[in-house]
Image (cartoon, rainbow over all chains, first blue to last red):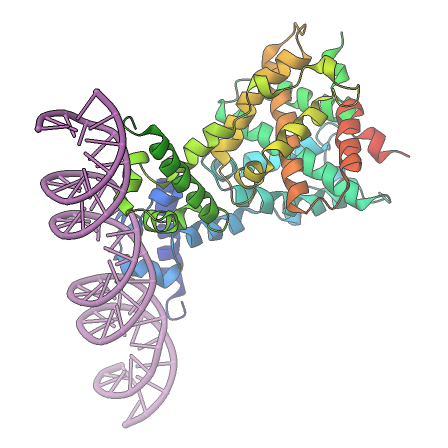
Length: 187
Length: 187
DNA sequence: TATTATCCAACAACTTGTTGTATAATAAAT
DNA sequence: ATTTATTATACAACAAGTTGTTGGATAATA
């Protein structure tokens, strides 16, 4: 990883891509190192120059797609509707949906769910709750609920091939978050 | 599974229990059939009389702990506070928490999350929404959000050793569900 | 006594992680 | 600029472990 960094990087990316193609169709425990290297056209032992085992590949892919603060557009650059938590979440999700759909879905990695939520919590506080000064423990559980809900809903939506249109989905979640279930059940 | 059903059942339970002990400490891909049978004191090939592979054990355990309609106490037997969706959910969760904490947690099986939500949706509709006559598609997504939120929160709560007391947790989730975030952020 | 359910020993094929080696790219020396 | 030394990259081959299967021994039922 020193003499020829371009080649190394390409090899590593080739292996990661081959892994991802396999992971799209099989649970991780069914993926062998042999399959990965065959797909990417390398010797099996080359794999071990770059990764510890198959799970290590997944971990490294996950780290790459954890959202960073820089990726969140500044609120004042957005319309009022766009500047809502769920709309921002939808944007972030769509951007990496190729990875999120799988990682957060039925065949995914629940460990990633937690990493994802833990990465988003401070971003939400930073973006929407700068002058919140109350019980941070309760807030943490509220955020856990909301983020779990958003993740579940978006993943379900993608899994169902966006059977609802994007605006309707937004309306359901946003109005629930704003006014609770009553707005839904009554009338 | 015919000549001596008691013995068979005991063997199967022994194997399942041995599996669960291992699963509590290792991800499923690290569990070998050899370990399971050694722990339960059987020959390795006996395992294959009862299960297809290690994942089959997990599937069968999951089927056993999916909540059934019979397990939900009739609403009229409960106090007003007890008869709320989240309180019922807490009750169901606590009952099988030994399994749910793991299956729905970081080291769990995301496939179970979906099975669990799909099992609960009709129970919720049956219990709370008998005379709901609106857009069932939107309702489905609302339920997906709420159930994802409840599952995430409860699992987080157990994972953090119930750092919040049960009443406070209930209050956070219940008031959010009833009135949305505003009750939280304002004041 | 005959049948067959339950459990087990042994087998071939595959996967894993490691070690030692060939090749090709860089750096150093003439 | 050419040759030589160094070492990064990729690979072949190995031992150990796992998998799923087959055929047989034992013990319970008919």
